[in-house]
Amino acid sequence: MLDIAGLSASYGEAHVLNDVSLTVKPGEVVTLVGRNGAGKTTLLRAVMGLHRDIEGSISFAGRRIERLSPNARARAGIGWVPDDRGIYASLTVAENLTLPPVVHESAWSTEKIYEAFPVLALRRSSMGTQLSGGEQQMLAIARVLRMGSRLLLLDEPSEGLAPVIVQRIAEIIREITTHDIAVLLIEQNVKFATTVADRHYLLAQGRIVETLDNASFQAREPELLKHLGI
Amino acid sequence: MTRVVHPRTFGSDLNMTAFIQYTVQGLAAGGFYALAALGLAIIFGALGVVNFAHGSAYMLGAVLSAVLLTTLNVHFWAALVIVPLLMFAFGILIERLLVRWLLRLDVLYNFLLTFGLSLVLVDVVKNLYGVSGLPYEQPAGLQGLIHVGGVTLPKYQLFVFVFSVLVCVIVWVLLTRTRAGMIVRAATEDPDRARALGINVSRWITPVFGFGIAVAALSGVLAAPFRAITATMGTNFVIILFAIVVIGGLGSILGAVVAGFLVGLVEAYGQAYAGTFAQIAIFILMVIVILVRPAGLFGRRDAA
Ligand SMILES: Nc1ncnc2c1ncn2[C@@H]1O[C@H](COP(=O)(O)OP(=O)(O)O)[C@@H](O)[C@H]1O
Ligand SMILES: [Mg+2]
Image 1 (cartoon, chains in turn brown, yellow):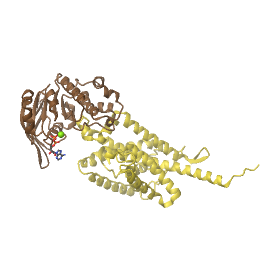
Image 2 (tube, chains in turn red, blue):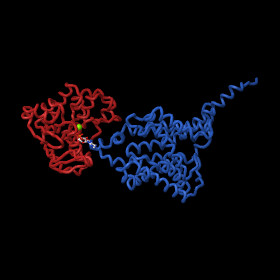
Image 3 (tube, rainbow over the protein chains, first blue to last red):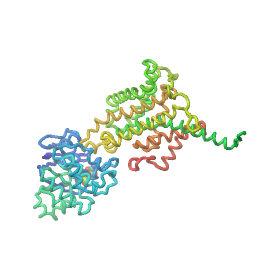
């Protein structure tokens, strides 16, 4: 569903990603693991079209998308949950949820969203930033489910959240991947990553240094984490 | 029986009457400011453009009303609709032809562009219609005075106040209760994020610019029967608009409206009780607000 080949990204003179290639297939959860500053967020922003200082190719659903605008990519089925959650302060919870267009018939209805996230239903007329961090994270995930995005880019969704909520998010990720939705997940929380992921890409100094399935990752976990410096 | 009026009581009644008259005068002036500042705030929020030509949009609103009246006999009530529509189209043209190309650059570029544009517009109007004011009569039905609870007030000033409040309320409802308004609010707060959520922000920018220009022109139409219609009427006006937007809080639409009426009042009381001090009073108000609340009355701290 997502095919990145030979991707390099820079901020002016500073090269952040170097010849990165990765794929995410439908129904697959793939993580990108690496220490702070490795370039994980930059990679997601490049896929979304918000970081344009790049070389290499990005294909989504068999189509090259490097030249598409961010809104065209979102409409094609890419959903982004940014590291700061990206909830609008001047919009209510309900408005935050219904702001983006529905892009696929598999999109969750607002009823289904409110059933899955009762706390959002309760707070639907609160302003976005009156929510707690965990509630904002759920709203950000709920928002891409309501759009019906086929590929979810999740930037550290478990960060700063209570274990119950992290578990809830893991359940949701497992449920949606049974419907052929693909997930590219950035995670520092290795326990969470290994409970949901099928494969892992290890990123260091802007390069992919290893690609592993979940079983081999778990087997070599301490060694790998030491190597990455996490 | 002769009624004896105590001089002191009589005096304070007179003061009260005058005070109410100044208040209404201030609220009418505030109506012009509120509408124009609303447009300025919306343009700044959605495009990040400090539109120096906003005073010219106000001026063109008044000049067009006068010209349409003398040439085509378009009356005030029709002008209230036609002039903003014409200026909406003019705003769209300006955005498409000029402003759009500088949006990716530093804000200074569009500030200079719109500053240059305002100089051109003022000179074009001077060349066409001279420097003396164009005539405009108060519309029938709004001339003269009205007696409200023992106070005599100019009908037209009351009308301006009520009408501008009504327009502000309508804009507020559009912004908070419609899907278009929701998208404009989101694009104002964070355009990149809106793009990543599938919103075609550039498609919304042009009409928002046109809309901001149209409300400034509407303010000019309202000013036509009330103020001297000259090519330079927008020049001081736009400086006061900037003060208003700062007082209300950059990026706050509600703040711009409230500060617009506040400044109208300060100006009217200043003229009544402090003479030439009136204009300075507005900027003293601005300095006090900035010192006490750097983000403005309604500005968010993080937005400052
Ligand atoms: N806007 C920016 N301008 C310049 N450098 C940046 C910018 N954003 C991130 N960087 C740099 O790019 C590198 C990768 O950042 P990022 O993608 O956020 O890493 P990660 O998400 O893996 O922590 C870091 O060294 C960071 O300092
Ligand atoms: Mg990051």
